[in-house]
Length: 294
Image (cartoon, rainbow, N blue to C red; front, side):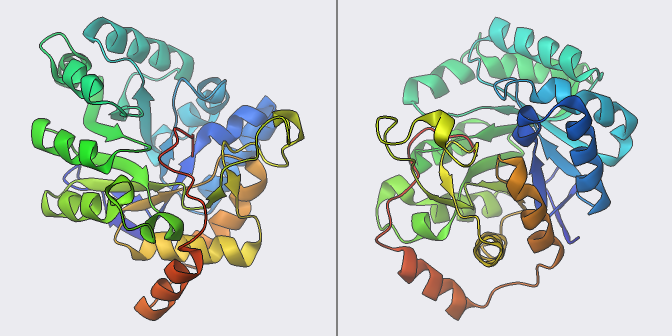
């Protein structure tokens, strides 16, 4: 599988990152098999978070067995110094490892959150201490919305090494600031910051729960995904062709193999095909900037 440099981290990430929230929906044996399956395709970048149910616990056994093969990204939703340290310690314990390669601020959404994170007693102080102690290697940030705020974070966090944000043809076809992730990607590339794309496979929001209860949704994703193999391949090719470092897989385990196959076969998408896909999706409802998991 193709690899690309993850900014200045010194790591070359596979063009697909495994979104391990998919493990939350499996029993431990199935989770073990899924991790081995993903590794068999050559994927070397895994992403997890304590908010993903039992994903950390489910990942732990095979992560420890294959630790040298896996570049591990984890996250915290905590904004304070104490909260970030506590969540980091909990994740290390649940995963059963001594170090996390990439530790990320999770789901930046509001201006006051960025103020809190970057304050003298904010989460970044904990990140930097953990990096000095060798507990984490790199600092990143994720967001499901607010491209302008992501760019503000780039300006204010001088040791930021990766960004995770939505990118798909629906978003690319929206001509407004709420969806200008192209500007985020351009700025990240200028600063040599690694980029991870989420919601590449989002087809829109689920209907209201009155119309379709959560228990009746055919997929575990927090958004309605594309699920046809050709559509998945098309979506992967589009996202990977935008210049992202890596595309994060969707959260339902039923989709993982199709995404792996698309990633393994990735050979680019020409500009005409990209434009055509954007135009075909331009009037679709956007799955962002709602706060939805990938």
